[in-house]
Image (cartoon, rainbow over all chains, first blue to last red):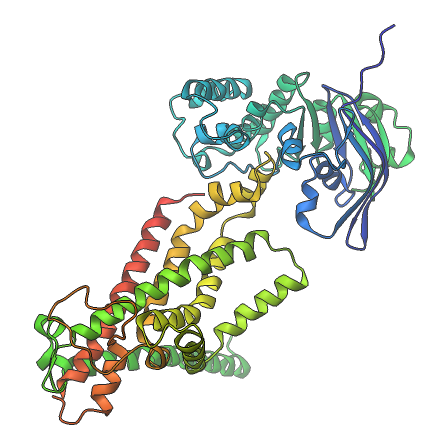
Length: 258
Length: 294
């Protein structure tokens, strides 16, 4: 008998306030390593807030108070010996609106390597290799191999979003957080990003917030339903959509509210 | 059907009147500018030539050129901005990129805003007390430049903050989320994308530093200083100097028998240099803006 796999992200009794407003209530969850987990729920239910807890980027916005525990690969990320920059290195985030930096494609991909190592750590050849590897992984290499010096902000939106994912990969993250990564993209772009998520699955634990229930259904292994800051249901995606245990989940996926 | 009622007619009339009034007021702003510039040039015409710029004042300042004053103004402007630009830019970076909303930073903000509202004559008095006497720098270019620097500082802070704030937040988020520190974010993304706005803000302060009279009159500008014709390194930092604004005041009000066109020509030189610098700033901004895309 093998032990059940250690969960990648665990939260226990997680509460979060924006000043006086409580946005998360006693969230307890275990996210399985190497799977795609989607977070669904109506606007304002706290899914983005929860996502932003996992690399502690919430703290940048002021007035945020958090209680409880978040463990990533067993380590409590609120421990005093956790360096924020190291945490964010291993827990990367992709945003709604693609946000490549206004520098070349090449520099976007190596940006993470450059800021996490003293100058001169890598030879040009090593950087070139990292760029090629990351761009192959996200499927941009063929299109962009001859245009690496192009400004990243001039790419198509779909390419920009892929590049934003590629930018995380040289840092070898454990977790990739995606905050509605397809909401700015068209059908083709959405399909491309979903395919990319499948390709990355296994190597990385992917957490994706989505407004699009159909997307959660086709593109995730596990699904979490949230409502008004509380975690209502967490199960395998098929189970959640076919046999929801909680009547609130059932009503939401039937489209009674949202 | 659809015919004009009396009420519609009256609305149409007030609409036309309002539009005319607003246009007239906008046009009224252009008129004084044209009149001032035109009047200056006509009056200054007899003295306007390159020799007027390069020559020194002669015969008790009633004839000759304005070179010492011109060089003095250039000194004052450059040295004051060399002091206020770095201080102002760094302060603005702190206020915009690091400062959280707490009482200390609110106080700093309030101080900056109020400093911008202090009349120049008060700056002059402060400069006299602080730099000339307390810091024992004496009446000198250094004292005058420091005073001008303090005067331009709050405006440089404000314009720099504006330039920094125009960099989209999403660039910063992108950096933070791969684990960049604030300083790495500022260096890699914020400054490169706001430098044109920052520089423009600094250059626009040239006209203020060059035009103010009171602060330098109290701290380092002098009626007359013997300088060689066309000499560039005419002053030492611990010396007093002549300056265009001060010179204009002197020859207009204090010296009898000045050739009539000389004060006007002095004003034209002051105005032209300031406009030239401003035009350079605007060109620079346009140039750098056309290169950035997002």
